[in-house]
Image (cartoon, rainbow, N blue to C red; front, top):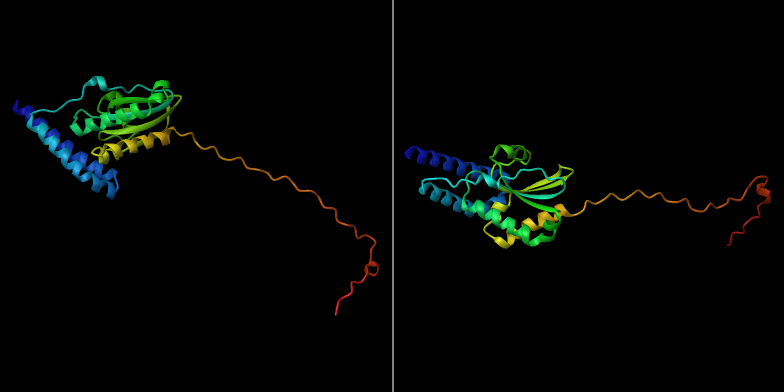
Amino acid sequence: MELKNAAAVCLISLFSATLVVLIARSLDCQTASRLEPQLASIVEELRALRGQGGIAAAPSASTTAETVNDGLVVYYFHGNIRCPTCRSIQSQAQETVQTCFSSQLGDGEVIWKIVNYEQPAAKPLATKFEIQMPVVVLAKMKDGQVQDWKRLDKVWALVGDKPAFTKYVRGEIERMLAPEKQPMPATVQAPGPTIPVPSTEGVSSKDTPAIPIPR
């Protein structure tokens, strides 16, 4: 049991240090400063896990990395270690999708999926989306291929502000769902009417009447 607890402490410490570094690298200075209180909260949560003598492991049933043919997939990626903040990001993102995009969920235009990025089956997605910590990712699919994607790193900064979190996630989904703007076709201007030019053939300067100049 002592060995198990020691291993848990090491894993939690490594996870917390890695998480802080990765978040700091992925966000700008202003967002990172807003995230500082949240990071402190995460550290306390990880200490609580350590105090319980174990790690909250993610159930394997949540791993759903199957390919989607068409639509916008809203992924929530998580790891084997799941702190309360990670779970809060998942629940708020899922609530936003189900509340704001219920019709799109019904017709398959939007798909909500939860994936454990530490499972072998999820490795291709984790590599493609550069997943190194729990996060929300939007992926636009066409014929089974990813056409476009965006990782919503700012969910970590906004998880403590639910209205701002919802606004951010909803806005990013709406942008991904918006139809692509087609380039305007080039217009060719029709030629104007041809103005006939009087012929000067056979006309000399003597035949041209003089124009009097007023004095």
